Structures are given as C-alpha cells and as structure tokens.
Length: 224
Image: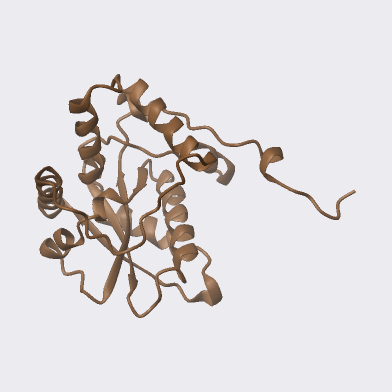
C-alpha cells in the first residue's frame, strides 16, 4: 500500500472479525512501527501485546469494574475539553455520527451504556497492543514520541490487512492489566491499540470522520 493511500485509508475500527492475528504479523507491524522518529532517538516506547484467553479475561474484568462503578485508576493525564471549545464540538459531532450509524437514540441509556462497554473490551479486537513508558521518564516528555509511534503502527497495520483503534478505555483499569500480565509497576501504561481484521459490515466502521480545511488552521509566513 502506498503511503498516501495508507494515510487516506486509516480510520478507527470499532468492531473486528474474530480471526486471530498471528504473532509474526504483529511482530512485523511493530518492526515497522519502531521506525517512528523520537526525540534524540530516545525511543521511549515499550509494548505489551495481548491476545487469546489472557485478553478475554482482561476484557471481562474491565467490564466487571465498569459495571460495578469502580473509578478508573488511569496512569496518565486524561484528556478533557472545555465545554464551549471547538475541540469539544468536534468530539460531540463524532459521537453524533457514530450514534446515528449505530441507531442509538440520545435518550436510549441502555444502548449508550452498551456502546461504552465496547471500548473497555477493545472493540472486540482479537489482540491489543499496550504502549508503555518507563516511570523514570516524566509523563509529558515522551508523549509526542508515543503519539508518533502509535500512528506509525496504525499505518503499518494496513499493509497486512489489519485495522486499528487507538483508545484509552482499555487501560483505564491498569490493575486489571497487571493482574493478567507481567507488566511491572515500573512501567506507566499509556494507551492501547486494538488491532485485528476489520468487520466491514459493522455500521460504525463505515464512519468517515471529517477534518478541518488546512486553510482554516494554517498561517503562512515568508511565502510569495
């Protein structure tokens, strides 16, 4: 797949086929992913890749925590947007698009709760990549590098017919991840990438999210 084609094709996949992703394929995705740039080549990222029964247990435990009302114990700053900001508007617009595709009325609390749970089970992906950073690094320092490596992983995945969704709901209960894996306390759990073969029949996977026009967000200096 050409680079331009991959950039245009990449989207957040919110439902996957149950087919397992071979370890060798994910390894190849990560081998491309770690070619991402980082500040002074520090490469602050580490990965925990989870599938099979281990991932199934984590999904179930996440849902149990959510349904019990357990507050998240997230290890990084949670992104939030000012109520009247353009950023909040874009977030709300995206939710409206998804709920329309999924036929979830605003007043249907049951369906909305069911939708929320999907993120805590990695949108039913057969595998998840958890991005970690050593706690010896401050939280904000490697943030850009982690974003770049996540994007590179998502683009690389397309080369193998895989879809991805960068999401934080799957890591909001880090104690669950540590219970079922050997992720040490010395590592900060930063973000998850759900990965698998897309279920293109799923309504939300037909979403085409919008982008602001470059002319509206760019200032040019020194050009003729």
